[in-house]
Image (cartoon, rainbow, N blue to C red; front, side, top):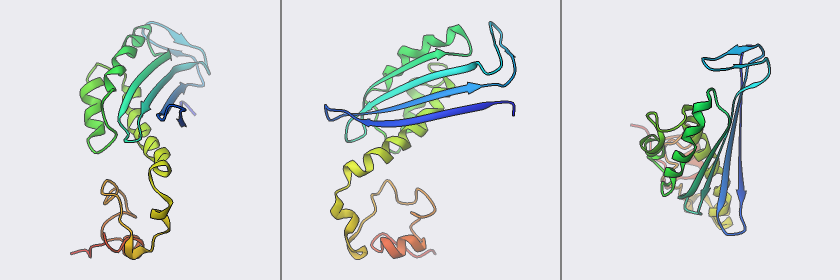
Length: 176
């Protein structure tokens, strides 16, 4: 082994009706690692970074906070305030593009920007049960509709899949 990246994503329901989605990255090398302006002993984190998105039930970011407990360089923590620019961005199609416009291209941290794609997925997974009434789950297939954002998003939700034919016949379309 020469490198370990641990990414931990967690979502929390808040008492004010909002949700916090937190991401944490830790990069560790099992040997002493020398950087331009510092070094890390074996097992000491090269990166130890946090990001919190506070979102509403529609997955619109209300606030964002970044914290670099350990960056590759002391200079890296200067990007922390830039992540507040994510406020107002909605987790929906175009999310990654919107993230890059606001905190990409040298305005943010590559590692945190990359993690934001995974945080968006975690937020959607977390809020799915909050947003979907139970009646939608138990409905007969002939009455069910797949949310448009999920259509063609993966192998199972491909419009012409056997899964769609069986569970979402209203959205199923034969290949051709």
